[in-house]
Amino acid sequence: MAARTALRRALPSLRAITHSEQPVRSTRLISTTVPSLAASPSSSSSSSAHPSIPDYAIPDPSRPTHFGFETVTEGEKRERVAGVFTSVAESYDRMNDLMSFGWHRVWKDHFVASLNPGFSPLTTELDPREPQHILDIAGGTGDIAFRLLHTAHVVNANPSVRVTISDINRAMLTVGQQRSTSLPASQQAALSFVEANAEDLTLTRPLHPYPSAREPTSHDAHGREEQAFFDPATATGGIPSNSVDLYTVAFGIRNFSNIPAALREAHRVLKPGGVFACLEFSKADAHPLFNAVYKEWSFRAIPLIGQLVAADRDSYQYLVESIERFPSQTEFRDMIVDAGFVVAGDGYENLTGGVAAIHKGMKPR
Ligand SMILES: C[S@@+](CC[C@H](N)C(=O)[O-])C[C@H]1O[C@@H](n2cnc3c(N)ncnc32)[C@H](O)[C@@H]1O
Image 1 (cartoon, rainbow, N blue to C red):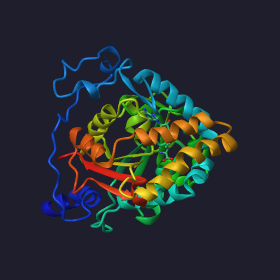
Image 2: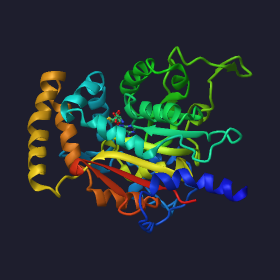
Image 3: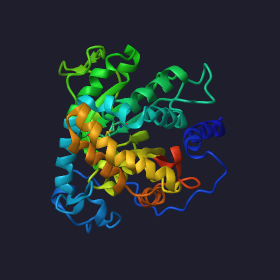
Image 4: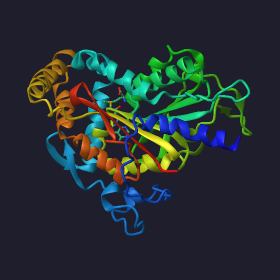
């Protein structure tokens, strides 16, 4: 019985990580008990108090970084990225279809299918489905979260899976919240929205008001409405360490001002055995002719479509430049390993010749 329980606990992570009998890449581990970030990022630019955290993984608003092809400070990038996504929020979903010829849907479907949320192979009537808390970071208008919920609740018949959509931008979250009202009520009840910077998840702000279909089930000692499920983000004002089973981030991480800090936070909030999964644009340079056509399309057509459809050329110019600046598959894989994750095989899977890639890592047990 004990062996069966141990196997059942191990299976979701192994399934998500191990697509083949490939060796696990060695990892430079950092402490799994990362100190609270509440005061450190803004009040300290040195990691001397936390020897296991390298300086570059502590957000510093004055440190240089990139905004597209421009060099700016981390603080300035955060503000300008906020401006981009506030500007594109209403047109974001339509533009995604136009810019990618609908391919983003295929990639997102494949990403979620590869994670197979809510699947419990050893479930029986006497052995209920395992609860799972998924954190969809930079979740924007909800494309990934809605797919995760559908797969867990409908395909895998596991209603114990809940998803928190987190994003730094209220405008994107608000569009996501409006879209979520068309989901079945049970899925809406398993969904929550929080505003947070992925680089510091100790500070979160729930998005209010909740969708009307998300009925509260009880009241707390002060007569305040409690939500239908326990949500670590809304319950504590931050995402606690070791509280998340699966962390997803799709087309978000290249916009972060400090990617190592976000990876370190992902590692902190994940439970041991929890999985980090990222879908992001990547490098298609293994296929030079295809790559040349793709670059031509990106740099010429996308800003023009942005101008014609969304009256916003600059934001879409930034989006293509940010794709170009993002690290290669192997560089990003190494950053994931540096943050303390173990990866299986190459650690990534190319999609459409490398135009996008899925990276996964597991927090060691
Ligand atoms: C291209 S959208 C992706 C949305 C969604 N994941 C999808 O695949 O459709 C990128 C999102 O990243 C968010 N973002 C940018 N910087 C962030 C940060 N530091 N922390 C959290 N979210 C951030 C933006 O607000 C935006 O909603």
